Image 1: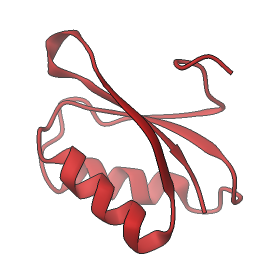
Image 2 (image 1 turned 180 degrees about the vertical axis):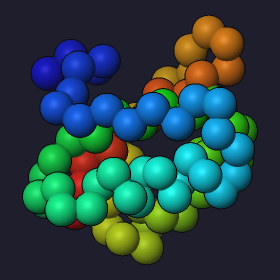
Image 3 (image 1 turned 60 degrees about the vertical axis):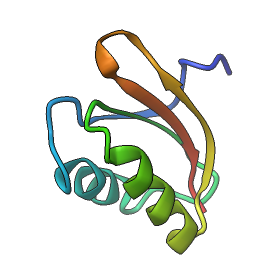
Image 4 (image 1 turned 30 degrees about the vertical axis):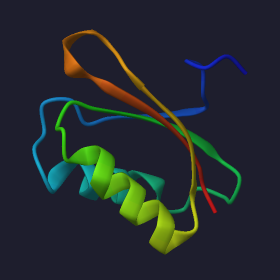
Length: 79
């Protein structure tokens, strides 16, 4: 899998706290453990919020990339 390819992508660009993480939580419901999700957000607090959610839920934050326009692209493996 390339760093920008994944089975599931969640786009939260343009949303502000707490909406990006709430969208992430809603969209991953029912996805099986081990699913790789790519999450995009441009709210600077999304990094802290997603890291906290991953710690609580046991998800693994594989990597974070900052792209043009302040967009943060995350790769998360679900627990």
